[in-house]
Image 1 (cartoon, rainbow, N blue to C red):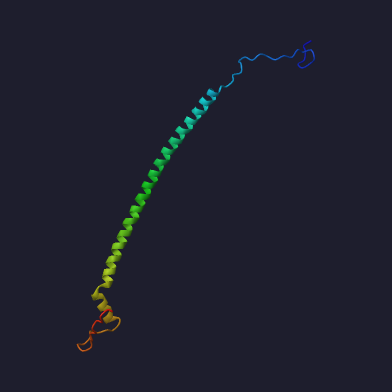
Image 2 (tube, rainbow, N blue to C red; image 1 turned 180 degrees about the vertical axis):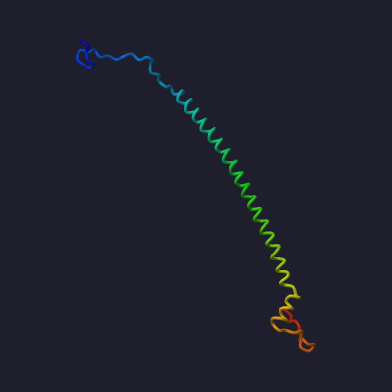
Amino acid sequence: MPQMIGTAGAGIGVAPRLFPRRRWAWWEWLESISAWGLAVLVLAGALSYVWQHTQVFRLGYEIERLRETRAVLEQERKALRLEMGQLRSLRRVEEIARTRLGMVTPKPGQVVLIPEAPIQ
């Protein structure tokens, strides 16, 4: 009759290990940490490189957009300066004064010149 495992007369023993348990020496631990550290540094460098190139492209697009905006604003500024010059012309001011305000050219005796007072 086969004996049951764990019974009093079973003769339970410890089986020998096929491979002996290795103890890690501190230099092996240090080597594994330095290998992981090197891998992390290389990964961080690669990510930094990719991030920088992404930023360069993004800023390049931003510069182009700002250049286009600047060109549009320059055109608008030129148009406004031209319009300002047209609105300030004496011929236009005289025409508005005569037509809308009903002003006329003064007769020779109507203009009185006041001498300029000296600045004290």
